[in-house]
Structure formats: C-alpha cells, structure tokens
Amino acid sequence: MPPAPKFRKLIGPSFILLGLGLGSGEVILWPYLVANWGLGIIWGAMLGITFQFFMNMEIERYALTKGESIFVGLARKFKYFPIWFIFSTLAGFVWPGIAAASAKLLGAVFGIANTNMLAVGLLILMGVILTLGPVLYKTMEKFSMLLIGVGVPALFLFTLKLSHGHDWAALLSGFMGRGIGYEFLPVGIPIASFLAAFAFSGAGGNLNLAQSFYIKEKGYGMGKFGGRITSILTGKAEYIELTGTKFEMNEGNLARFKNWWRLINWEHFIVFWATGAFSICLLALLSYSTVYGVAGAPKGIDFVLFEAAAIGRASLPILGTFFLILGGLMLFSTQLTVFDATSRIISENVLILNSKWNSNSLPKIYYAFLWIQIIFGSLVFFTNFSEPLLLLTIEAVINAAAMFVHIGLTMYLNLTSLEKEIRPNTFRIIAMFVAFIFFGFFTIRTILSYII
Image 1: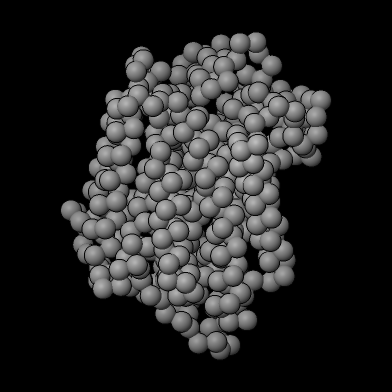
Image 2: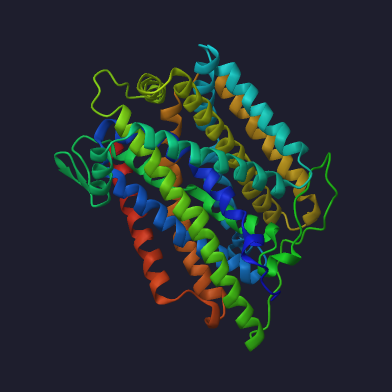
C-alpha cells in the first residue's frame, strides 16, 4: 500500500461526484418541491445525501484497497453482472433531461423561445470538451472545482440577501420534518417526484459507482498502479490495467490503509457531504423565500424562471439574470459529468464482458459510447420532447431502483472480498442496511403507485 500524501493533494474526486448532483437535485428537484410544499420536506434531502456519503465511502473502500473498479470485483462474483450495469445505466441516464433544463434557463437569458436546438448545441459542446481534454480525469476535476468554487459562494450571497429570519426558522423545522400543516410528507406530494429528489441528493443511480474510477485515476491507494483514460486525439496513451493489485496484510500496510481511510473520509465529508448539504439548503431556502406561497407560481421547470424573476424584483434585474446563467451552467456541468460517468461505466462493463479485448482499447470504447449518447440525446430534442422535469423524474425513479440494487451488491462485495482487517465496521454496515431498506421501500411504493 503506497503511503498517503498530504490532505490537499487528495482533494478532487468528491468534487466530481458533487457536481453530478449539484445540477439536477439541487437546482431543480428540491427547489421545485419546496416551492410547492415548503421546507418541511428538506429532511429528505439531508437523509439522502447522508446515505450517499456512506454508499460512496464503501465504494471508495473497495477501490482504495483493490486498485480496481467495483464492477471488476462484482464480475468475479457473477460474470453477467455487467449486463445489468449497462442496461440500468443506459435506462437511467439516456434521456438528456439535465441538458434540456440547462438549455431552457440559458435560452431565457438570450431570448431563445424554442430551446431544443440550443440543447443539441450544448450536447455537442460537452462532447468536444470531453474529447479534447488530454487526461479525462483532470478535465473533469478542474471543471467541477471551478463550477462549485464559483457557484456555492454566489448562492450563499443570494440567499443572505433575499431570505429572512422566519425563512431560516422554517429550514430548521424542516430538518425535523415539520412543515406548515404536515409532518414529514405533505398530502398530495407526488411520491415519484419525492423519490426523484431523494435519489439525486448527491449523485444518484449507478453514478455513485463511478467514484471507484475517479479515486483510482486520482491515485488513491492501490489505484496508483491502474492507469488513466486519455483523449484519443490530444492525450498521451497510458497503460490501463482493469484488474487491481492486492497488498499484503501486515502491520505497515494496515497502518497506511488506516491513514488513507481517515484522510479520504474527511475529503468526502467536507467536499461532498458538507458542501452538498449546504448547497441544497441554500437553493431550497432561496426557492422558499422567493416562490413559496406566491400565487401563480408554475409547477414545472418554469418555476426556476419564476424564481429568477422574483430575485430580480427583490434586488436588481441583473441578479435575476445572473441566477439563470449560474443555474444553466450548473446544469451544463452536471450533464457533462453524467456523460463522463455513464460512458466510463458502460465502456468498462462492455470490456469486462469481452475478455478477449485488450484493456487499452478502453478509451476508444469510452468515446464511442460518449458520442452515441450525444447523438441519441440530439434525436430526442429533434422530436420536440422538451419537458425537462418529466425527463428528470423518469431518470430518477429508474436510478433509485438502481441504487437499491447497488447498495446491496457493494456491501456483499466488501463483506466477502475484503480481508476482515479492512472490512466495514458494524456502524457502517447498519447505515448501508438502512439505506438499502429505504430505497427499496420507496422504489416499490413508487412503482405500485403507477400500477394500482
């Protein structure tokens, strides 16, 4: 086990994972629900991102100690697991709902009424960025850090300017599930929409599993020996090894593992959990302060436009415009990161299924699937299917079911494949079990609500 570097050199992978949820769950879904039902439901966002913290850390535990993605480990248990991951990833993220929402916000800024062609242009731009970046991981890390570094402070200033003491009191009550006239869940709230927001309190779906790629390419632990995906046009090819390397269970290696584990827990807690929870609260509070209870507030994605107009009236019109630009860029970055994560997941699982293929063909497979997704998304927009909220809800319900599955599989893998000295402790096993039951319950309830 290589020794861990200083803490500041570890920072990065959690920014990418946070960026996966910052656009969809934080900008759209939770503010949408709060705008209509108040802050009494914000407990769901806090619980959702807390569950994801424990999920992500168990995914990191495996990649840290094995130097390979969790998909490789699961394929050893059952060789057909890759088929499930390919199917559930495509089903959950093939719809370009986040790009549709980004185009709608940016189109409002520039006076574009029909934003379908703008959305197509954004998809192509995402493909160009991912294709031309020499080292894929570094491209994603820099993009995510820039977005969060600018976006979160801006949201904080917006919220301080426009919220009042009673709004903050409502937020605190919401942590306890106390809303106006209800406890925990208000009558009439669509369970599918609540589940969608809950699943996107962070990354969501199989995207959580992509964390094993990011910490491997960052060089965490045994991932130092794995190699990285580089651009087929501008990058220098690196040798990629899908199968990881074990370290010997001796006193020195265990001490290094414990140091790694302590540092990466702090990195993920500060960047993913604390920053993510803070962002969710800011955007929900901003929505509550400007839109909740206002007559005529729209119930679709247009509520973000309504919110921006309210911000402009309460402060300066240019600030409302800036809010739209910021939201549009957040959503753009999220869709970009989704394309990266899904292309990684699909390409590696395709490679696992075809053991005769050389692992160094991974970049070509990655970019093939990246552009297939972009072409499909463009075709969706050409058909004028343009309601972003519906697309996001469909994605999120499928992804909640995928999370129910991968939580159980991750715990099964860690408890059966890792040596007892580095397995999860009782507290983390309980946390994962509770998350497993929670996602299973709400997924089944949502499916039954459409059937019955």
